[in-house]
Length: 290
Image (tube, rainbow, N blue to C red; front, side, top):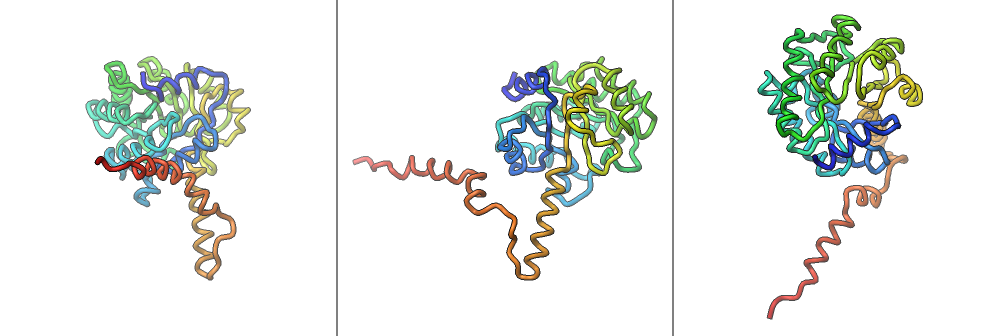
């Protein structure tokens, strides 16, 4: 078992609710780790926006997501969960996606039951695949794990928005029965539905705390009381980043330098200039052979 998978298992087995700001690149992931959070999630919405300036509607590819993930994983040492979308195809594609994310070093991968091309879970127009295809995706993901892919499987359903809560709960239970490690019911519409999810299905569960989304944003204490193990904040950093950049650009347009920002020394420290200089010093002090 890899170090990251082992760490995630330990975190899930602990008593605390895991607060999980989501990242979109190596820098945001490093800042999350430096702030003391125990894990992060590479958000497909945020990566599509930051890398391509495109919506989360299935436009970003498996290769692009995996490439972004490798950069993130190289920058941090804590567990990272990767958005695996719909698995990028049929069950054979799902298995390849899971193996690829495992080889890159992700601690877990999320696979969902939307009809491809998928879209953000809190937008209109979502469609889900029929039960047999949904089950085959999660079965393929679990099989990949059982046959050597060192990674946990997070199974997601978007059925609440399309077919109602009963269907969503049926799928969550079915995914758990197939061997999914973490369950994610996207977009429950009120606290009562969140309670039903946590009380009627087994294992660790994730809440998606999207400001302005369908699901009520509850306090960490309340989420823990309900029974969630992870609280994801998918766009908190991206939203703040866009706001800060827009404010800075408005100021620069009138000749004003930003007043609220980190200094150059802080940026140098975050990206590791001191470590880089120490590495160079190991080699510049060598004496030539006589």
